[in-house]
Length: 231
Image (cartoon, rainbow, N blue to C red; front, side, top):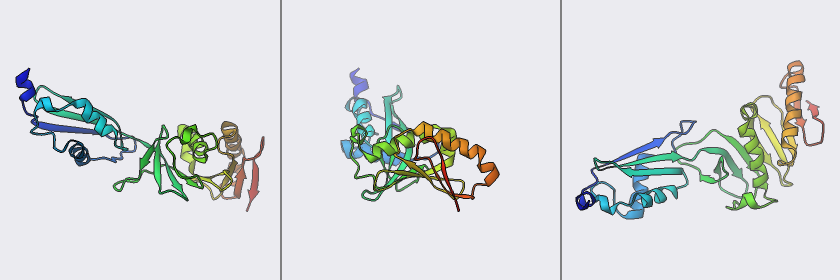
């Protein structure tokens, strides 16, 4: 046992699992740098007994781009690190805050200088980011993120909608990828499913006859109707 503890880490193996969009927000060199900054040395050449794998995991998981880090030392004294990245779900571009991403759980992810994720955008007047925003009833970001979660979880709407804009009164306007119209949505967290059901019915019934560029606005902000304005 003492021999094992005093034996030297011969090699570091880093496996970064790509996310579904093939984006890599963190590289092997970034992982090495995180370890060096925390412990003051690299892994290779250190005695096995000096390496606490749980501490290495905790250090790596403090990084905003890393969702999970699994670390172990094999029989050949190779230290293995397996990284699961955080997956950006939406990009937030607020009038009073620098841009950032939110992952599927609503956790903030910094903008990467290396890659840009092509995801649903939330723009407008959202307020300065606060870690507890999901617990704040009147948070505009909380309400917008609830709407974004619905869109990204629905294959049809995630393919249709590219932007949620929140105005000064907290009302949402959606911008679709197809067609030259906007969709006034009203409060972003109210009757979400009902509003999209109305919009989908209009898309399927009216759009094939009228064409995608016939309308400038399709509002679902009012109950039980779609208010369509032509050009």
